[in-house]
Length: 111
Length: 112
Image 1 (cartoon, rainbow over the protein chains, first blue to last red):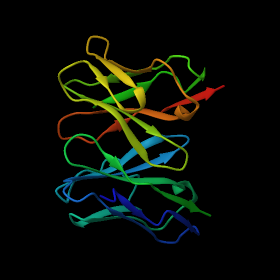
Image 2 (tube, each protein chain N blue to C red):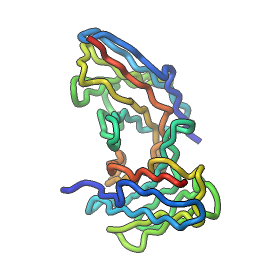
Image 3 (tube, rainbow over the protein chains, first blue to last red):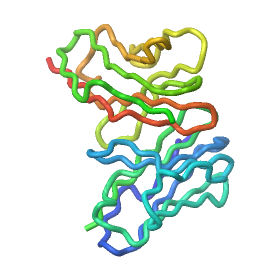
């Protein structure tokens, strides 16, 4: 299995632009998570899907952030408009039951 | 809600020395506990997990951890570290039907 696949690996964008991060979970996994990692705040859970349904989105910072999971093999995290404070590494992870398997992450820089 | 505290942000050790990375959790119900490792510019990789049963769990790369319910701890240990163990280590907790919540991480630096 190729593991969790995230794209792009790196993204540099200007403040105010829309950014879309993509994730392909491991086939057969029924849970998907988006996390954000920064030096100051560590690893924060943004949103958790189970069977394509959002279960917990309490970690989504504000209305500028939105996440979708239209089917079991694809999810997106969108930031519109982006701000410099959104600069971070964003991880997608999937899970068949308990433990989570992580992708390589997307390093987002908003200038 | 569950939470995790990693008591040491940085742990420097010499090669072949033993190491313990400390983790305490807070939860009102039964929990599942995990340790992950992150190498630079990579994602997180599962080291070991406690779901139920024996409180001493063994993982990859010679690491082990012990679940102590009375002390709400899940400390990670290795009897002899290598240079290649230098990385960031994260403790995580989850409950039934919830996502993993991570601690702030501990940077393990192994020098010769």
